[in-house]
Image: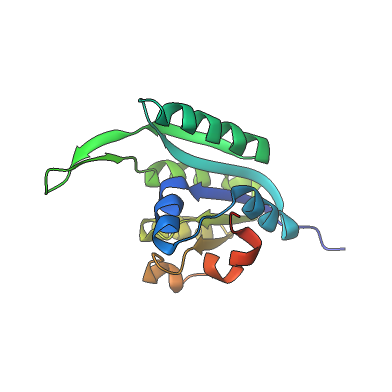
Length: 168
């Protein structure tokens, strides 16, 4: 019997949340975890999420993080910051590209493969580093919002596995 590959599952929470809203359906993180686990031994599962400092968002975020921990994820957080757009609108922003890259490279030695859940092309450098260490990397992203560079890489469109991972 072949042993399952040791994998790391890394989720760009903001990317998945906003792409889910744009696509009209959301991923169920427990179902996604179990989908990856069917063919793999999940050694590391990390969810990257911005932390609001105001209520009720702070309490909702805390409850969501608690749920994710019960499913099997480690949570990586940092404070949301407020930025002003060109039109003068204040938005919350939290970018985890550097942190995700660092965590993946840090964990890589104990893994055979990376599942990187994001449609963001900023992770092409991460892909190159993973491949240079003779490890595998597979991207998971919504069809709408999946960068062309990811489409040229080993990837699975979340839309293609929607029935197995959709939040109901």
